[in-house]
Length: 372
Ligand SMILES: [Zn+2]
Image: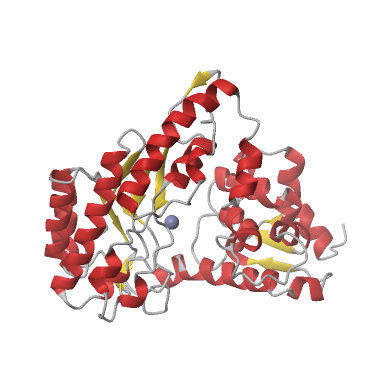
C-alpha cells in the first residue's frame, strides 16, 4: 500500500468535477468508518479527494467486482482477551475510509470482504469459537450496511465444528445479509473432503451460496497432506517439489553464484511457469521474502532453466512458450511411465513453426551439442 503522502500526490490531478463529487462521498464514508470502526480510519484522511477510476471495455463502462479482500474486526480483541487465542486478534486490516479510497483509485465498484487467517479454527472451546465468529460477522454486516453499494461480505465460520459452521452460515446469510462463506483449505491439516465436514457443505449447497477457499499458510502441504485419492504425491507433489527447487535456486541466489549453470526441470517446471506472476513479484511485495536473487525470477527461467513439454495440451504448451520462451521448452515423455505423448500438443499449439521445431528437437540439439 502506498503511504498517504504518495496517495495524495497521485490523486492531486483528479478532475475538479470528480473531486467535488468524491468529497461528498468521502465525507459520508469517513463518518461511517469512524462511526463503527472505533476510529480505525486515519485521522485527517477524510477530505483527501480521489477519483473513481472508470473501467471501460470497448468504450463501455463495466462494473468491477473484487471477490478476494480481507478485513479484521477490532472488537474481537475483547472476545479473546485472556484466552490462548488472544495473540491472534491483532487487527491490521480494519475497515475505514482508506479502504473506500483504495477501491475508488483502482476502479473497484464492489468488494467482497472476508476475514481470513482462520486462527479461530484452533479454538477447542465451542462457545469461544462461536463468539469470535459472531463478532466478526456482526462487524462485517455493520460495515456492509453502512456502505451497501460498495461492499458484500462472507462469513468465516468455525469449520472445526462443522454443525456449528453450518448454523453460522445460515445465520449470516439469512439474518445478517452476508453472501457466502470463506474457508481455509484445511482444518489443522485435515482435508475438508472428510465426511465430517459434510454438514457445512450441505448447508452451503442448500443456501446456494458461494464458498471462497483461501489458503492458510500451506500448513497442509506435507507428505501426510499429500496422501489420499488421486496419487497426489505424484500429481501435485512432484510439480510442487520442482517448483520449490526452482524457487530456492532463484531466491537463494544459486543461479547468480553459477550463472552458466543450465537446469532442465521435469514436468514443465512444475507450477512455476503456470504461476510465474506470483513468483515474479515476491521480492517486491513481500517484505519478509529476503530475496538474494539479482535478477527477476523470469530471467533465470529464460536463461538458465529448460522445462519439458509434459503439460499434455496445446494450450499448455502455448502458455509455457509465452512465459519462458520457445528456446527453453524441450520435448519430454516420461517413458516407460504411461503419460499422454505431447508431440501433438506441440504441433497443435498456437506458436510459430520455428518454435515447434525448436521444442521438438532444436533446443536439445544445441543444449546437448548433438551433431547434425
Ligand atoms: Zn488473500
